[in-house]
Length: 280
Ligand code: MBD
Ligand code: FE
Image (cartoon, rainbow, N blue to C red; front, side, top):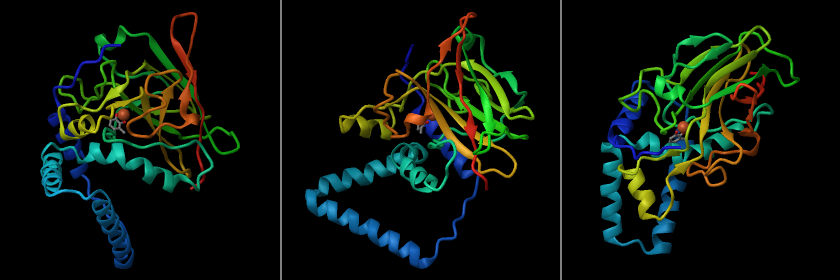
């Protein structure tokens, strides 16, 4: 595994911010609910300020840092690393199917469609790594294959970079929308990603370093699985024995989401994963 420090925290942060700003979101939050949540949030801040007797110097550094987070385009990164896992957890409790995980900042809708058996678009540099074949079936909660299933997949390369958030990569590198067959079966050939390091040269990375934490996520594949009449699922798959699996900076691993690929006769790593989708 080669890991090079990202020189592009600002570029990837601003790419993620621009992508998010390109959409417009609304929520049907009542004034009463908004007031209740905001009142408790402010009371929580007040309590910890008093508990730790936060100083004026610390307050000014916080203000400065929050401004830097915005100017560095790192709000999507910061929020998805430290907050999204709680949102995901509280909103997925009612589902019985495959566990979800956080989307993170690097999903891009509309990746080119690929057939049920496919290889993700990749560069010659990516092809030097041993192939990873992820195969399986998209089913209902009783294990019956679903017609019309699609598996959107996106992941980092062996250096930890995501296409469209690192300028040197082709647009759809290691991304695709895989159209499963009529029984929901699929087999995707790709490469195993490297662990992901939060850019160390941006405000999120500077904060992590200042606190003495580590900036790593375990190697992971991102997936969004859909089928007609079914609850879409956004999740991630990890690799047994991989670094940071038990200490993800984004707190987004779950034991049900760990692959254990086996090497086949041709030297490919092969892992099977079935996705069970809840009804709508
Ligand atoms: C990632 O690749 C990621 O998945 C998350 C959640 C945050 C930062 C980078
Ligand atoms: Fe990721």
